[in-house]
Length: 120
Image 1 (cartoon, rainbow, N blue to C red):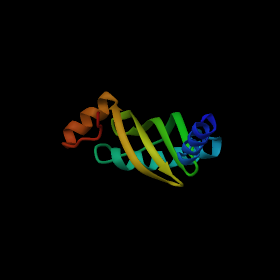
Image 2: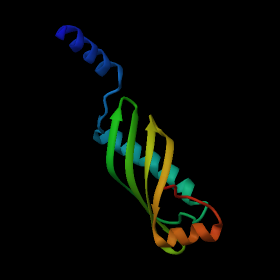
Image 3: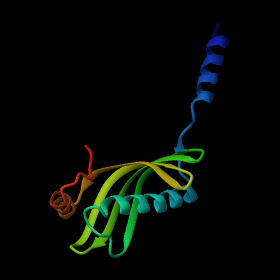
């Protein structure tokens, strides 16, 4: 009986993809894809005019797929802006982007533009 339960648990574990921390290459690729996707999203409210930086807080990978929590900083006409969010990444593209927290000046620009960037 124990062997049957153990075999069933082993098969279940093998069927689901195991997530592990991203390695350096995966994290760098995810950072580039997240920067591009987030810049495109925030540019609806504020033009990205200067340097950009992505800080990845967590990154979990399973094969070519990864999920990351991040903070994106950029320079625009009104100064320094930031946004926090999560992204799903597959190979070299972001497949899902959720912006969660905006800097006060980005939130003001969002309201002025009449759009909704962040989802709670």
